[in-house]
Amino acid sequence: MGFNSKSITNDIRDIPQPVVTLNRATIVAGIIVGVLLQQPLFTTALFLILLFPVLLGPSTSLIYQIGIRVFAKQIPDSPREDRRLMRFNNSIAVILLGLAQVAFLAGSPILGWVFALMVAVAATVALLGFCVGCFLYFQFRINRFKLFGR
Image (cartoon, rainbow, N blue to C red; front, side, top):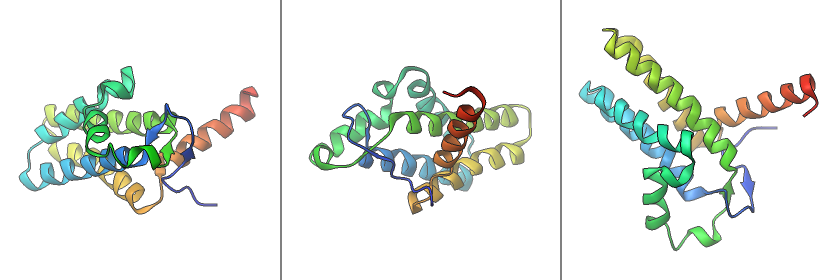
């Protein structure tokens, strides 16, 4: 059984798939542009854009707000991804992009780009159909259940 990037739900509170795709594509594009221009500020911007929805929920996401407007006609009929998965995936991205910021500030740009590229690779793989974060999330949930029974 593979972990595709579409954990479909019917819950209206979950994230419409076009918005999930926009989120992943924005991450990939931002990091690629940052690498090509050798400008860490692109990763800083992505860090800040993703930080608020991780802490406060999807309504604070710039990408979500743009996505629900741009894809307004598609959203009513689109599948939705579990909001917990989206938050988990974005949390991993925030941690890695945060580590990238620390590395850049510490004068280690190569390490900073390694952390940023880890995020870009994971988002690219998710766009292609395999969600690494989803796999990690389900492993976490399975092991938590084995340990604590919840």
